[in-house]
Image (cartoon, rainbow, N blue to C red; front, side, top):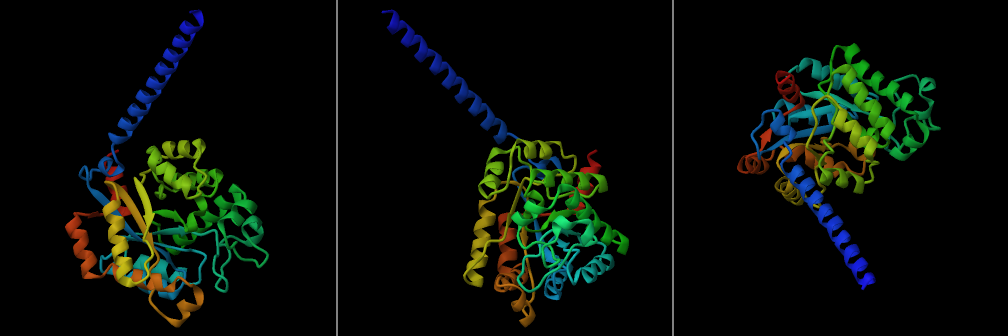
Length: 331
């Protein structure tokens, strides 16, 4: 009889623990469901998809500059960022100076990924040796950077890239990270946010308080641990609710349809969508095997069909200039 009572008490304890865990999980889920998005915090309507269409890789080559400047000048997209170490960076920074209403940031670059088209750091190589490969260029891949470069070297180089633009007379509207390198290590995330706050220039920080968002980036291979989540929570500038990239397509029509599917699947909130537009040339084809996707990305955002789709979906567009204005106005 005593064994039966002990068993019942044990089962009761397990039931209470399970019930508490279930209730706790429900409360956590309810908290996430009722969390105010960054779009709402910045004064955008509740329940709306607020999107930044953002061109990466400006400055990488002339083809990227032509495409990005055309899309920005015609308001087909809202934002772009320039790769300071690259051969055509200066001309795009000058374009940004000449077009002060355009939203242009720094695509902080710690890798040089192409086989035959390479670049080194903005800092003297001897001052950031961990960032430089045996060829004297930035490493090809993110894991190589994480393996060799200290956070101190990373901080020195990203400051040098921002300072290059400032020395030319242009203060970047935002900073982000080429190939996600600055999210490749918790120590890199820390200096990324530190630099953003020191300059008062917003980084593409993604709010990780939603476990679904954090889990997605974990599954993509980013080292999202409690330390990184804490760094994001304590970051003092505006954050994105979501971040993604334009999907590939087998044909141009397929790419458009895949992009529409992406937009429809997005939750409400502030989302940045990146892509890499370039005009088609023989030179571009020698740089990257992804040239076709890039050429389609230079074309698709001016496509009347996609423009009408955005209107039908009730999409609100914004950029980092407006985000910071709204953020500062609410202080």
